[in-house]
Figure 1 (cartoon, helix red, strand yellow):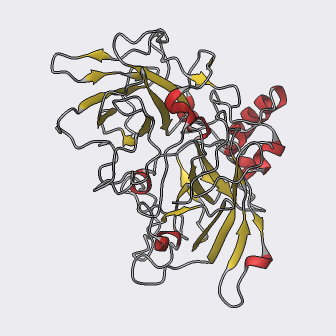
Figure 2 (figure 1 turned 135 degrees about the vertical axis):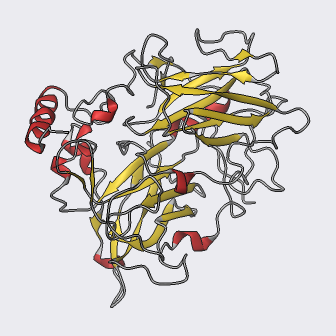
Length: 245
Length: 163
């Protein structure tokens, strides 16, 4: 673990000069754990069929509305900067993804996950799990109340720090639209240094992972608002209106 | 519209994404059930203990269900979707039914994998199967399919026209 941030940043710059891409490069050596975990063969172009044309369906039997508020799950107030993150989930044709599951997870304000694998010596917060779920509404809107996550160190290279982020897991109307990604915060100086974020080598594409501060959703003497919209790939199936049950 | 890029699921997803019964589309051992299982390997042939597999499938009659209730399965019908985080040995398993259509649609996530991968697992003997993507039938009736992210046995992964 003697590689410096300077060396990692040089590696990133060389790759980015060659190949600006909108999707993350799977073969991206500055993120060391990719070395043995990226496919080397070209992806096979396949027309989706059968189960690939229909995403799983979730409903109110799956998700309790309280799961969208990460600040009330443990019987006490978590420590940190209270935030609301909201936005819309759209498909590649601009249609709202309605009544679909959104799952999030994140570190606490000190940069520690409530996960047994996280050994970062920062305090756990007994009032914060960092886990949330909600369903989008009829216009594709989602909203979570949470605590701003802290950045945290990791072992990719010497003095490596992940920018503050919230993990998002999303479904569309096709199974082929499945997405897991990370939302970042505006103005974070660690983004430019981070090999996971910088694996998206086109800066315009990376900017789509950065939320914007939304003062219209900040609440007086209570919390700060952020807006982040998510666009999935296009649906392959003929679009059908969901029934009203 | 331009799509939002993916990012790795990272190492710390289990407490958020795993849930009771996540890999049991039907109860383990129930009448008509089958186990689909295997290991996830990296390019050195080592197991991947921090991967997550999701499957989507038709029911036994070939209908792909649009039924809610996957996250709280008790009392729900067959939803045709399941999720399994690999264990320390890189092993995943599902208790399900054999789909009436020839394959399970599969998504793979892992730490060190910067975006999800799609593939299929075909039933043994399925017509028109993509080479290398056919499960084997074990002596005890279970279906076996190993996923290799890289290496000489690298799994065939897909892109779709609109991805």
